Amino acid sequence: MTRRKALVVYGGMALHTPKEGAETVRDILEAHDFAVDVTDDYDALGAEDVGANALVVPVITDGELSREKMAKLIAAVQAGTGLAGYHMGLATSFRASVPFRYAASCYWVAHPGDIITYRVDVTRPDHPIMDGIESFEHTSEQYYLNYDPAVEVLASTTFSGAFHPWRKNVVMPVVFTTKHGKGRVFYSSLGHTAAELEIPDVRAILTRGLLWAARAL
Image 1: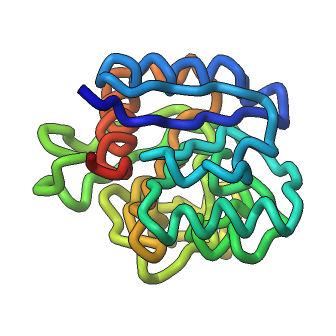
Image 2 (image 1 turned 180 degrees about the horizontal axis):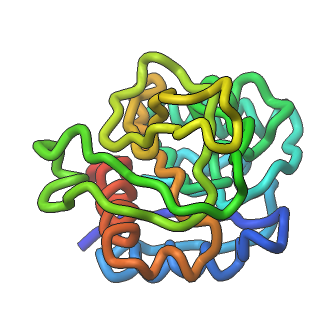
């Protein structure tokens, strides 16, 4: 039986525990019969055969990739390779790359108050990623994003204005899906550290999102 391949690439800011987060993603995918390659070599994202992966998961804060290698990654996604990320992955990865920003569909700009308790509201309980998950309180960074209006928001959060009064009552995506060409894109802003990924609802959302984004056999 052919196993789907996944590439997980980690790096950047140590406080995000990228290596441990990448290992969590690996464990999730291997439990669902993926053959997973985990590496801290960013160039793997632009390898000639990157399109052989059903899913690519950058667990990266910032970082750089050459224009040529980025073009290979984006071409793979447009051809059907899934792209998924959580917290810093996608939202902060490869800040300087316009093609990556277009594919990622979001860009982190602030987390007012730093670590706070906020509410995650499930907006699409009918979606398979959110099935059986109810709105919940969460303690972490409440990400304020610039995001593509084409995304389908599955869960959101509302900013209280306690820290940035000029953003009071702004509703922001926490979990979303979209497409880039033929590739499915999944993002969750939850998961400031790998330990946060062990929270049952956070883990369930990430697991389902990864599986949703991965290209089918």
